[in-house]
Length: 321
Image (cartoon, rainbow, N blue to C red):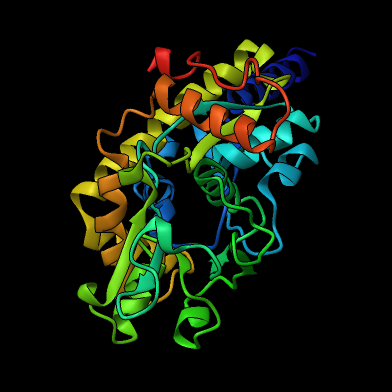
C-alpha cells in the first residue's frame, strides 16, 4: 500500500512539475510573407528569446489571401501584425482589435512615379492613373487623396485607381503613372530593375505627414480582460523587441534567419533589414499617441470609419516592460 501511494505521489509531482514548466503557447499571425519586415520575431524565436520568456511561439506567415483580422477573429492567432487602418476598420465592424504595441514608429509606404513622366508634384495627379494595393493597404492612399480633395473615381478632375499587384510591374509595363511601394521592399525592386534614385519622383507618406501607423501588434479586447493573458503578452512583446534590437544590430545575421524561415533573396533581405531599422528607431514598442490620433482622424475624414474609435489602443502591456 505504501509503495502504491508513493508511486502515485511521485507521478502527481511529475505531472505538476511538467505543468509548471510547460511554456505558454502564443500564435503570431504576420501581415505578409516571411521577410525582414518581420525579422524581429524570427530572430526572437531563433535566438531563444521566446524560450527564455517561457513562451512557445508559432509564427504564421501571411500572404495575399490571408487577412490577419479574420484569422484572429476566428481563433487562429493570439496576436497579429497589422496596419492601424485595417485594424480600426475591422474594429468598427465588430472585431475587437486593440493595439498593444507599436514596434514601427514610422511608415514605409511611398508612391513613386518616373521622373520623365507627367507627374512631378501632387498638383499633377489629376487625370492620371495611380497604382494602389488593396486588402487593407489602401487606406493611407485614400486618406491622402481625400486630404488633397481629389476624387478617386477617375475623370479629368480626379485620379484613376489601378488595383495594383504586389510587385512593380504596373510601372515597368506603363500600366500606371505612379505605383505604391514600400521603402524596404518594392522601391529596391525598382532599383534592381534598372531604375536609379534620380529616375523617380518619390512621395513619402511619412515625410508628407500623411503616414498611418503600420505593423503594430494587435490582440482581442476580450482577451485583455484576463490578467494571465496580459502577462503573457508582456513577455511576448519584451522578447520580440529583444529580437528587434538584435536584428537591428546584426542585419546580415537577421537576414540569414529570415531566409531559414522562408525568405527569398538574402541580399534583398539584408537591404530590407537596414531600411526597416529606420522605421523602428528605438525598439521600445511604445505607440506615439499623436500618430494614433492622426491615423484615426484620416480614416474618419475619408469615411473609412464612421465614428471616433474608443479603446482601440492600450499601454497596459508596454507599461509593464
